[in-house]
Image (cartoon, rainbow over the protein chains, first blue to last red):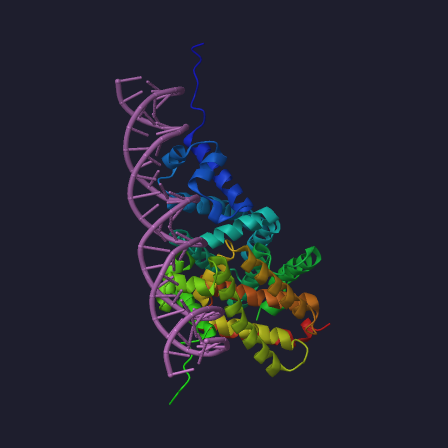
Length: 193
Length: 193
DNA sequence: TTTACTGTACCGACTGGACGGTTTAGAAAA
DNA sequence: TTTTCTAAACCGTCCAGTCGGTACAGTAAA
């Protein structure tokens, strides 16, 4: 008795719980089913509790974007470290990170919902646009001919697109060939005018 | 005299009017603003009148998809005729049709809304998935090495993706270079079996 | 050629439910 | 006893879909 209890969890922990809950709903049912009540329920708290952590839905959606983008960028940074600083290193890391994330079908489904969400959530869309602008800048400065580098980036993005929406996506064999070819193209003289 | 008068317009005409109205709303304000009331108003009729032509919103959205997909495929067929049946002809037509459509910023904005809509409208999504499966089949049978053909298709799709969402899209110069290079790649021995 | 009827196109008030957000009351840890 | 956090009832708005009705063109029997 008189046991001293800390808070059940910290605010940061609760936020993580909310991100996980919201993400699971996005994977299973999509954005249109992601109501505040449902997120709260899935996270094991009340709507009021949820809104204590995020003042409104826009803030929640923005935070979910940041959360998942953070995961992607963290991974991108790790892979980028691994690749060193040879010409095209960053582009290779971008390709590897993209393929890695989007090959998991749950992640693909999640991103399909997130990208759809941008239509209704302008601030999230603006954030993503800025990310791509930053990435494109890295692409252009990755040590390859900028045009070729752009072409390769778009190929990766096209793969992402097709996996995300399941638009005639490559099978495993095709994907392996593609990844190898992309890596070759980064290294090959073709891309070094 | 004794002129026989029909209704002010035919049902088909009214449907066209509705497609135009709905599309304009998608361009200007996005899917979340495309309510039945607003579509009706924009088309110059009442909600009841609108629902006379489409029994519910799902049917309307499906029809809008078919309408725009029809426009794309018509253009694709024309360009495909033009290209003849040299190896890679269909892939070139696909690239030209895609770039042509998505380069217009209103069309890009429209498609961004349409693709977002798929998240909430399963039947529209299924239809689009089937389209891409059909296209991928044509890609594989376009007379090039199927893997290379797939890579080129994904590059085109990536360009589409970046233009549609304005994710670090290429500028005019870059786009011209890309299109030329894509055509070259189709023709180059690299992509031949 | 009048009258009665049918089908098509269209109208707009209304309803029922969903959902974002507020409020209030209070528990629990510090 | 103040701060942090939770719960749940409640409110207002929005919106898809319903429904009773109007307008009018063609059809055909009387």
